[in-house]
Length: 403
Image (cartoon, rainbow, N blue to C red):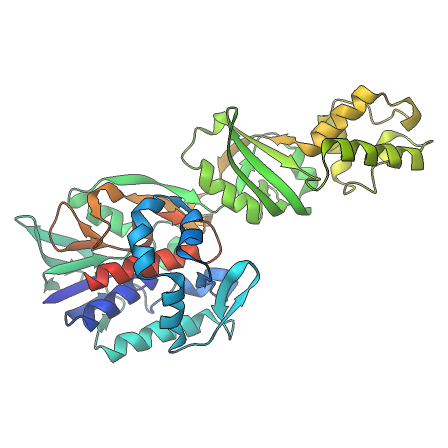
């Protein structure tokens, strides 16, 4: 039986290996001049390949359609994925259970997967673009490339999303899926920076905050909260907790969204009030705007004072309790409004894709066309940073290849 795998990213490499291991004559077609092009830029070139966590913890970090992935992640868990890789490459685990190649070279992961393909005789065709996936009477029959027509019984589409188009993720798989009758959920940027309304952030550009909490509200309802690092930029905000937040708001009407930044999450409102009183006592003859340097980064002070609707020129000994309360509330909940998300080509992954309602989660086969399978980012599944998205590619590729 002949299987054609379209796309040479992690989903394609893994599905091609397990397809060939199962006895199928397997051809992998990649339009780039090398395999694993997007792998080379993940983890800043170090390749955060997976996360050393349990299946349950893994699913908690999946943003879109975690239920769909349940069977796949239990069949090819992070632990099994690591065992698979460690037969050919040494790994290490860092902060947040993030797993990298010991060498810190993404190319070692790609080489590992390429060597697996050689072992089972997968025919790899580089620099060849697939133009169409063809079916007859509801059954896959062939693939047409710019050079040839390949007769086959099975096709696994592993073409990725539409982020980082320079790596070849240009939405080809979405076009194939639509032409074969599938619903494609509109692609959205995930794990990206957030453009803010207003211009206050311009004076804060380059300021990095550690140990802060970002909470996202849709109307009055909290939909996301995380503790960690973030960064003010020329467009608004970025950094780890912001990237995560973006994945929870990319399908929302942003006019309903409020971002609340707690600059001092370790202190309660009461503790923060006492702390401010201590600082005011220490600098009792100074103005408010010159009395917060021990508490806040200098660049933030005028922004926080302005947002609190208090006058920075007032001297500490004249500052009333009600004004202090406003200051505390602003430091504990500095409000920002998102204007938009950054362009999808800046996003780490694509949210949206082939609707999972039309895919059998036990096999990754289409419910509409026999012999058509999907794996990886082309599906409407995405997760937070930390190695989860490559593991989604791996586990769905494993299931599709074995099916």
